[in-house]
Image (cartoon, rainbow, N blue to C red):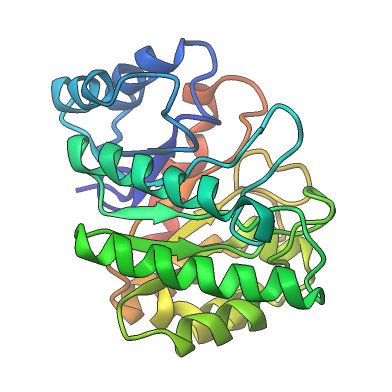
Length: 264
């Protein structure tokens, strides 16, 4: 199997914008992907999403819980103490989708909140703990992801240390890290060493070029070393292609052939 087939997951909220969302499943399969991910599927019925997955022999690596009013600027609800009831209803809705598709990993966004606000911190820890327990009962793992505040100003979970502390505080296998290489680079982390340190708690990786978030073929990304690290560490997860194609999604996949060449 190629790197594209074995390692990569096409993020359908970013790639194949030339197609409508439901048609992107076939486009991803035609491009050689065997796995996809996306942000929010809730505009479409779960059984319709499941049908597109099955028709194209695709699995789902991860998707997001409802974020609140995304169009209005909300970026999750977990750290918002006044929105706990809505947060928990959203987790249940996400688990219903996970059961139908099926999917086994759910990224839960923190929201826009001050990380040093004790009420926001308490709400976040309590809500993530609750969501992780609820998801575990359904055979789903909750993931958390630090996001850089240049791209998402005011985002609560902006530090990998905070994510590590939270993951280590919960019972084993209840919570995983979604390590986004693009966000780590934007935060100034030395990605290769940092990724290697956190890979044992990392369930899903995402990748994009820096600084423009196009294809991950920029000089700042040592693709040879990154993929060698995955092989050496026997990382079992997927690498999500969460980038904006500079031209077309299919044309931009030349970076995969380059990565396959250096990984051989």
